[in-house]
Length: 113
Image (cartoon, rainbow, N blue to C red):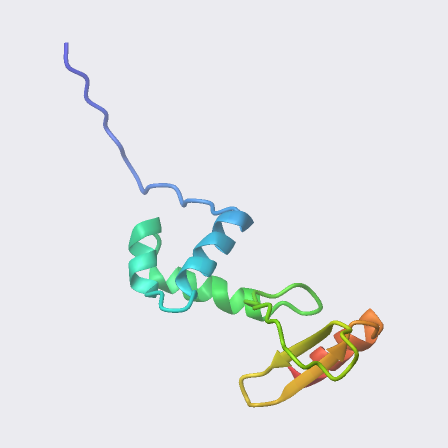
C-alpha cells in the first residue's frame, strides 16, 4: 500500500547554530566569493546572510567577525619581536607590540573602530 504524507501549515523556521553561521559567513565573505552562490549552496537567503554579518559586526566588547592574515615582514626594526599590524578600511594603520598589555591594545582598537 502506498503512503502519502500531508503537510499542513507553514514549515517551522530552521535554526542555525553559531558554528553554522560562522561557516556560512566565512564562505560568503571570503576573497573572491559570491554571496548569492554561497546562499544557494547552504539554502539560506542572501538577506539572512547580510543580517548575520551586521549582527556579528555590531557586537560590543565581544569578538567580531574579522579575517586575519599572518605575514612574514622582513627587516623588522624592533629586534624581531612580534608585532600586530591592523589596517582599517579608512586607511589608518596601527602597530601594536606583542609586549603591549591586552587592555591597552583593546582600548586602542575600540577607539579607532
